[in-house]
Image (tube, rainbow, N blue to C red; front, side, top):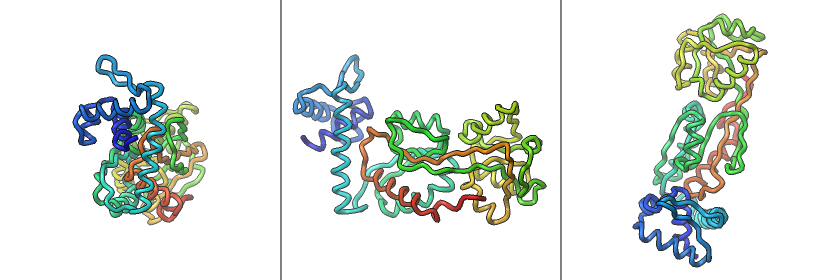
Length: 304
């Protein structure tokens, strides 16, 4: 059973298209067709149904895909054990929440690029529903997102980390540092929030609905850095993850406002697809992220 046949099989399975798989692998389409035929003959089963130019895995094909991915992953681990990080090439596609991309991801990316300078890395930021769909369509190799806890049988979670979310204002705002501030008082302030499709803003909207309140933001923006800048200029109140504001709060330019009526717990989560072939770039990046998760100094401190 040749490795290249397994690689071609998994790529066709992921893309659902012989031509695209051949192009990505650097083969001609007839060559990939022959490789799949060789594999089917060797196994004695049909791996794909080919109906009206549509390619779908058979039941035996789906079952074999899991074993093929494990075989290739083991081979890659063996190679990496001999030469860690050297000559690793290819691509890595990461889907990430915007706030995580600007606050948590840079350290990991710096280390990854230093370890694997020949890997072409693509970072895609988007709202969770769009990112999840791209992940399911194999347009992303890894997703790093913030949401309520999500568990799916076809996802492998590398880690999950609790992420508090706070109301926050400029340090000289009348509400700065106040505790037990009534929700009505907060909602009287000009609200500058992330888009409602952002996970924590969506959860805030749900919590307000429970008590018959609605969000009417003065400003919505998809960029947390922009919101932080506007806050420090002295305008309004926002609702942001602790990791995004930790440096400004400790530096004295922003302050948290405590509201007993709102207590939202979100989670940053790193995952890859169960059926995804674990490439060397994926494994190295996931190892870096897992090490950082174990080193709390890389993530900042909680409890503002």
